[in-house]
Structure formats: structure tokens, C-alpha cells
Length: 304
Image (tube, rainbow, N blue to C red; front, side):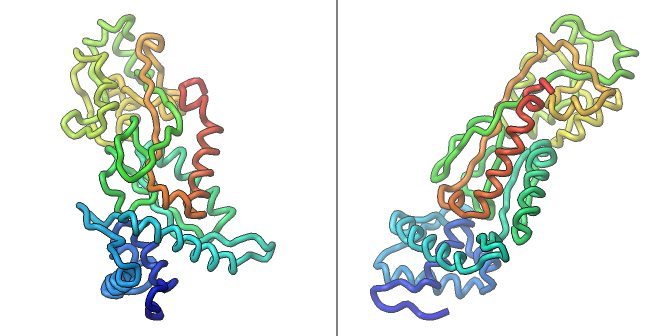
């Protein structure tokens, strides 16, 4: 990489800032660019000297752009766009490439994110999508992640939060379980049934915690941090499971009980930095996710 010319930032330095600004971490940026951590530090220092101010500020878990850094990032994105425009496929269309890292809940990861990623790969085979399946609040710092899908409207700083879709939870029992235990006819009858749901002490998402509020008298049965465990434990007759309808309705051995009385509606939200969403490869993944959601909106709402 060439050194900066006094008064004019180096394009290479700007691309380094772009990588750090998107990931929030020097190590991640170094891996992406194929250079070492020391070179990243040196390039950022050179850019700051040229621009006459700080472009990054240290925060818990990584780095955030300063106001000057955000201005420089706009120029960096123009440089990146110009460089990538030189790469085109045989059909003359722009070739998209890179790694898109996202986190999402287990169910969303399996039934929305994974097929969306496969769709992106069919059209853009040089894009790799990494999916971290986890159920948690939106991160205060999005270090190492491009996209986060969370349950419930998040309170975020230096990021955008966009509502993607609502989905419903219902109460389900296996046919085997309901043969051995009379199906509840009222909410009060639920006191006689064990509940399959999240581990209360480990649940980090407020909306999911509140979702079970209608069944305070139900005793816990099998609990887990993973919603696929909830589904399989319910299918194995461990009790009544409070399950996403779009997951439970795929299994003919599960029967929804009290469908008119137990209806919990939650929302999926997309969280990302504004500069990350402008990356063409990230935009392609987000578009595929939206398309997948549109195709499954009735299923998510428990009407499929």
C-alpha cells in the first residue's frame, strides 16, 4: 500500500477505514484485507494525520467512527464502488463478493436466513454468508457483525432498527400427550399442565420473557435456550410447548390448543449500521431476507 500524500488521503488508507468502520474491529478488518493488525493501525494513523483529526474512537468491544470518520467513510465507499465497478461478469453485470456476517434467532436462522443466503449464493457465488444462531438483545457494539435479527423493538445507538415482520406463538401439545392428558378448555386449566419454553433465568429478550405471562401457574417441564429443543421436547410429550407457529405447524403430530385464548404476537427487527447497509453484498442479503419473509408472511402469522 502506498503512503498518504500530504493533504490528500490515500485510497488505500480510506479502504482500511472502511473495513474497520464496518466491523468495528482492527482484527476483523485485517483478516478481511489480508494484512496485519499493525498495518491497520499505521494506516489509520496516517489517515488521521492527513485529515487533521480522529476518525475512530475507542468503545467497549471495538471502535466507532467519529463525525470526521463518517465523512471520510463516504469517500471510502466511493473508492470501493469505483474499484468494484471494474469487476464484471461475462454478462456485463457487476460481480458482488465478500463475507456477510449476521446473527439471528434459531428459528429465523433456519427458516428465513438460511434459504435467503442460499438464494443470494445462487446469484452471487462469491458472497459468503455466516449465520450465528442466537437469541439475545441487540448488541451495544456490532463488532464483527453486519446484520442482527432480534425479537422486539431494540433501543440502539449508531445503528438503524427496521421492523421486518410479526410472528405468532401458540400453545401446542403432541397427539400422544393429549391422549394421556385432557386438552385444556380454559386458561385456568393450564395449571394442570407443564410448560416447555425458555430457561427463565437465562432469557435475555424481554418480549419473549413477557410472552409466557399468561401462564404463571404452569410449572416448568423441559426448558432450553434453543427453540428447536422446545419443538422436539413438545413432540416427545414433555408438556405443552409455547412455540412459534411457523415452526410448530410444520409437524402434523403437534396440535394447537386454546388457539383463540393463547395468541402471542412478536416482531422481528433488523439492526445494522447505516454504512453497512450500503454495501452491495449486504444489501443483496437483506433483499433476499425480505423476499423470503414476504413469501412466508401468512406462515409467520400462524395462518399457513
